[in-house]
Image (cartoon, rainbow, N blue to C red; front, side):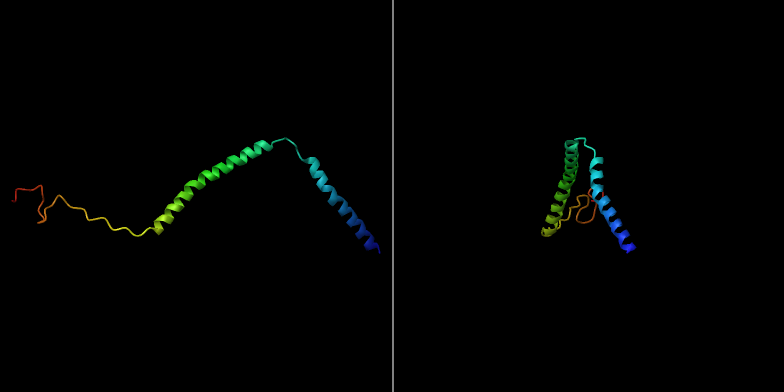
Length: 96
């Protein structure tokens, strides 16, 4: 019997202090009307994130277009204007 009495008292005390704790937290809250500044700060943070997402999305779309694109033809071989078809140098005309 003694044990149940202590148990009831303990539960009553715990219920009392458990319900009073939010009241203490409410009284300790500080009211400084900083709502506007908080929203301005959050908007600035969102602006930074969006500004970083735009180039990333453009790059992602560029990669997608590059993957989708058909392979291009290789460029034509460049002409070597310094040698003649016979293999002689164009600058050395003394051997002719």
